[in-house]
Length: 325
Image 1: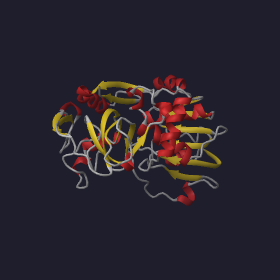
Image 2: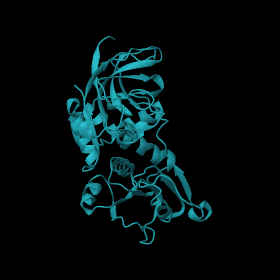
Image 3: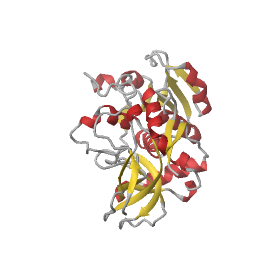
Image 4: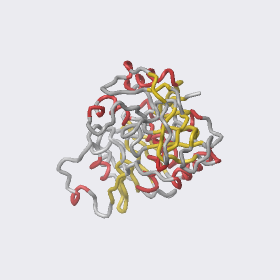
C-alpha cells in the first residue's frame, strides 16, 4: 500500500510535551502479517517507560513507533486468513518494541498478535474497545489464570486505583466475588465502590497487621508490598503479583520458606501470551455484563501529544485512550 501516514516515531527520550506526529511510509504488507487500520489504542505505563528511559536499550528497534496494543480493522490480510474489514485487537509480543506499534494510522501486525473481536462486542464504540485489550486482558489473566478466582472468594486488590485495578475490581464484582480494594488516596474510595469494591482500605503499608484477610490477592504495587500482602492470605490462599506501581522491580533477600505463609501460594501473571480463546471469553464477559471501562480521558489522534503529557503528569485515574476516525 503506497503512501504515507501520521505516526509518533521516536529514537531518543521523549517527554509528552515534546512529542510530534510525523509523516512516515505506510508499512508494506508481507506474508503472515496483516495491515491494520488503527481505530484506537490505550496508553500504558510500559510505553511511558519506553519514552523516558527504555528507548536507550540496544534491544529496542530505533526509530520505533510505540504502542503495545490497539484496535482496528484489517486493511490487507497478508495471508493471515482474516478477511478485510474484520474488527481486531492487537497486543504484546514485541509490538511497539521489536517492531512498530499502534501510535499510527496503520500498523503491520503478525498473525500471532492479532485477535478477532467477537460479535458480542463488535457493537461497542472504538473508544470503549480501545480501553480493553491490554488492561482488561491482564486483569482477566491475573484473576482467572493466576488466582483461579471464584464467586465465593474474597479478593484483595492491592493498588486498586489504577486502570488495571479498576478493571480487576469490576470483573471480580461482576463474577460475584467480595472485593477489598486498597488505595493511597481517600478521594478515590467512592470511585472504587462505584466499580464494585465492597470495602475500600486506605493503604498504610501494613494491611496484614490491620487484620485484612482474603482468599485471593492481586498485588499491583509489587515487591514493595508483596510480603505484607502474603500475610493477608487465609490458609490455602493465592497471591498473584502482576504490577509494579511501587517502583520496586525485584525482591531483595526474599526467603520463600519464611516469606510465603504455610499452605499459601505465590504466582505471577505476564500478559505477553494472549490467546484467541482468552480474548473471546474476555470480550464476551464485558459485553454480557455491560461493563464500562474507566476512561480517564479520550483524545483524537491529532492530540496524541496532549494525551502523552497527561500520562506524564500522573494526574488521572483509569485509562487514557486515543481514537482515530
